[in-house]
Image (tube, rainbow, N blue to C red; front, side, top):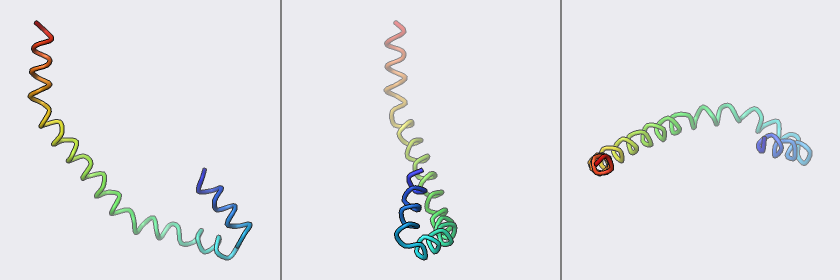
Length: 67
């Protein structure tokens, strides 16, 4: 919604620039898509490493709570 409102303001201030931005937006999105996919992958790998590192502590905590 924010992007749309900013585009409306840009349309009111300078309509040729707003039309160029409207045409260029899909191309910019396609250029940035691989970086988004790499970011999602790296985030998943780091979450997996975090879970593997904290697994022994969570197992010990769960066994001590069961007693």
